[in-house]
Length: 548
Image (tube, rainbow, N blue to C red):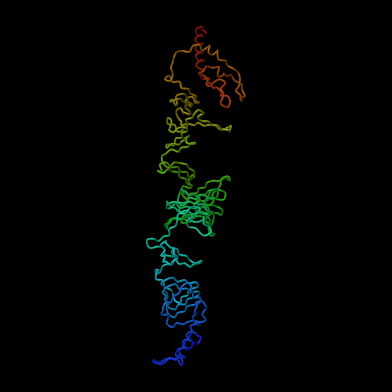
């Protein structure tokens, strides 16, 4: 037998026994054993330490047991054409190339890279499941139940995942907080989404809450307690800024979901629907601007060009082309009190303020009514009901009831007119307490053709005690002076109010008002006529008795 040096042993060579019964010579046997020793020494080292210079090829595998341990690590490759069955640890220093199946009953320790010519199959894993490691670093199957980890590559390509089963299709995260939101991004962990309360979603920006959707569906921007469906709190800045597009610069559109309902555009200009620089509300359905606030601050309703009066900002309301225009209607919820202000286009044109129902039109200051026009057309000042049937009633407080002033010398301050053409015309009546007309009056005496200044003198209004006595002494006690009123141009005889009997004058001598101005006394000289009349009668009797 010979060894050719390439890993092949040649046993059936010339001179070697090959036939049964052949006598083996010592020469042939020695040559065979020498060749075996040479070949084995070349392919397998005797001491297990010296590096082998060749390989032992196995055409059909190793049928006997292959025993390896940590002290006999193979530094080269183990190449098998079929399978490799290893009952103990198999130590491979570099590469193990196995063309068939590898059955391990113990531990496989690979110091280098294990290369498989076919896809390896791990019977312990579940088909279509992710692969992860458990606490002992063993391979396990993961079905996204939350008990394992799936580690992805640096830039994985993901398809749309199917989360959970049909009854559990959600991802659950922690509630988080404003400074540590539960849904965030790498490198900016204080910005994201968190859940501050049940059924509530909040958004954090830089560790501060920026927006919240409450459990009732209210949205708060800049506030955590929205007062309506949308509550925007800008603090010291603009609360809500809406920019329009380049076509018509509409800042905001309010649109009803019904196709036939109106859409309203709110903006600053654009599309030929409003003057540039104006704020407008535009009706898409009617293709009309409903309200405009122009660049001067004038408000127009029904017009895109509100008219300013005397360069002052006004509210300009323009009604329809026909009928009553510029209508303002104020009503309570039950429409029992309705106020209308409108301009009539009838003939003649006029402006009207009226109640639409049979109610009074009241005027007041603060919370107190001062004047009203009742449902019958009576004007009441300081009163809430008609006084003794008058069309114009004034009830004053502690000051003057009615004050008239005219700065034109030739014009009347007050014109009192009664258009009756027969009988005695009444102009003004005077009364106190419950006697509205029982104290005096100014009338026209048609028989005498003069204006009569009347004082009530009916016997039923008087208590009579007897004739006048001492008329002469009374006349002698009241001096008469020559003088003139301040501001007048002529002298005349006159009385002094505080020097006549109290029944002939009013007021207090030397009285002043709160500003120190004089409160002048008044007197009625006609009250002294009965005294003079009594003295004349007395004088006539005395003259008659004397025969004069």
